[in-house]
Image 1 (cartoon, rainbow over the protein chains, first blue to last red):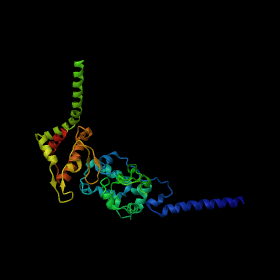
Image 2: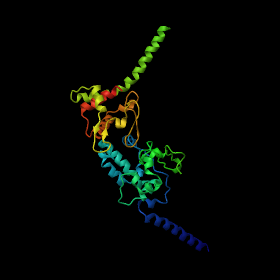
Image 3: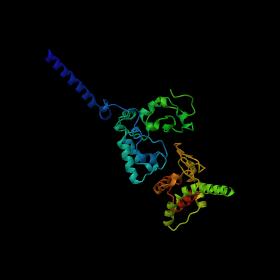
Length: 186
Length: 136
């Protein structure tokens, strides 16, 4: 009797292990980490040089908002960066490129980074966070003209205009405050 | 009593005048650096007209000047023409950190001359503009 219980527990234990192992190994990249604890939102920006060089002109987009292949593409055309000149000194260029690619969406344990990455095909490298399928899905109820016609927002790329905690990497619905509108976004 | 009052008045006058003077001094090393590059001399008036000139472009925005992003009042904040991000005032009297590093000055001249004028600024132009800004 005791022997059969022992054998039974060994079988159950090995089945559980293989189940975790199989699920872990079936997916590549992101899904192989499914059993790890995920953190909410995206990881906040930690690199001061990146803040100084890039966030003087726009919201300091967290590296986890795009995959590394997108960051590499963005960094190859800084003399025409969405119509602006954002050239960097060579020594700063390398530091910022490394920071962005090493902390990109596919390497992040944060929920929204993983969802952004999972929404993209492997060869897709969008230059804008707003072009990712995940972003579009989350903002589909918004009217674009309502954003561009609002001088306090100006563009859908201006995260911080409505997402009050965006600089901390938090984009929760209950933190949204659309300027000029009454009440919260529901 | 009267003497004391005078002293107080004089010293407060001196202090209020000293604060902006200290801030504008931060530009001097860079201005001197430019001067030494070609035995150049710079003027506030030339800097002002460079700062205010409008340049036509094919791409939008078709008319560009420094004020496109920095605004018309140099002691007030500006606003990035595309992203709406607030840009701190240019005037060293209210924003002394603006000119605290030569490398930072060079970087912004490179980026912003190319965007605003479609080319890099010459040493003469950069010196004139710094001379003008140092008075703000």
